[in-house]
Image (cartoon, rainbow, N blue to C red; front, top):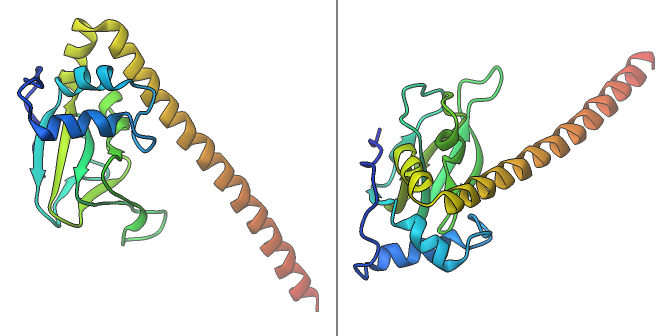
Length: 186
């Protein structure tokens, strides 16, 4: 497990390419596009760069001791997996690349992680810890609120998507049940 970064703002004004890329990615549709580039630069000042080698699980499903952090993928690829009911092997939920955010649920709640994230390639991240988020909210309350609203909107979108999938699953289960009943009567 990779430890979460230290808290507190970092110097985003050093001209570091990683921080400028992080700010640009934070405004991308795959991340939190409700932020302007200027706002994203401020948020990046509260993030820490982190290199994670290939085949490293840096978020583990069920981990209740996780300190809570969100990772913006700057470079590389992450496989998001979950153990589903009555399975022992994980199922790949999605594969994410640069500009994508993982771990935002763990950033805002204190619950165990809901999925595992593993790098499939050497990867570079910008990490926002729970402590960094708290410092952002204390120092830049309106921007902290905007970031939290962007995260909430992203989570609401995923919740709606899951609800659509559940409705589809229910329809498929009903159709299969009807087909099995028809077959049993034959």
